[in-house]
Length: 292
Ligand code: NDP
Image (cartoon, rainbow, N blue to C red; front, side, top):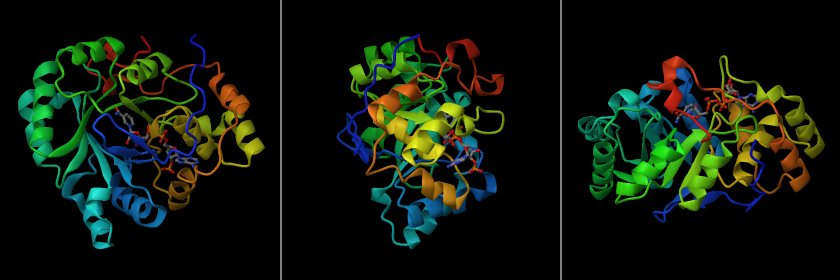
């Protein structure tokens, strides 16, 4: 197993700079499986807890109408200060669907991520359409999700615009070191999803003994330790919660750091497995997430 090669860095990073020159806030709110609580959670996060980064997708069923964003703008938040990531689902990975989805996503998405790592889609055609979205000013950045190194290299061979962001599952139980390294080498920012081990059949990292021990030692909550671990690896991170007190807790990760020795302890969790490898999530399971 690869060593934990990523040392704590830039612990004060509240935002990370992208290849495009734009910045992405280090902590965003995840919205998968937030259901009818999505709007309230997004409002709480932005207006009451200072989040400026929201992660969503058409597939999550929470984007329609853009109610939460309208409400936060009515509360005085400027849309241009928000980084909203949306994604094309695997069934939408055809060039003619890209524009349609971007147009119908109400307001300007900052980034449209293509991809569940699926095979059999017309990668170049889809990417060209995504590049067009940027040229037309419909999105500010474009990125990918659940890519393997092989797919990333294929994309980099023809991309006129580099992906700003690559989003993938990442937490101490699934570090994805090789993919992180490949992205860093190419200047591509990484966003870590399912940072707490996900939900409903996921992996309960919040109650992992190692995480709990470090949290206790540093007088932080396990959620904060997991979010901070991701930031200290140089990735942005998108914990999901529909509970206001947790939404607040998960972004209180600035002004302190995980010391190197504890950071390495977190990297040493031996039970290495990803959470999201279910059939329902992959077009091609074997070609989806991979450390290779
Ligand atoms: P997370 O790892 O963020 O975990 C969410 C779970 O942790 C929920 O059950 C939540 O419960 C609970 N939780 C949140 N904060 C705390 C806390 N402080 N203490 C204890 N429990 C807590 O799971 P996700 O899989 O949802 O990943 C995060 C986001 O990443 C998604 O919502 C989505 O936006 C994105 N994502 C992207 C994917 C992609 O393919 N690009 C795939 C999967 C996810 P509660 O809500 O009750 O607080």
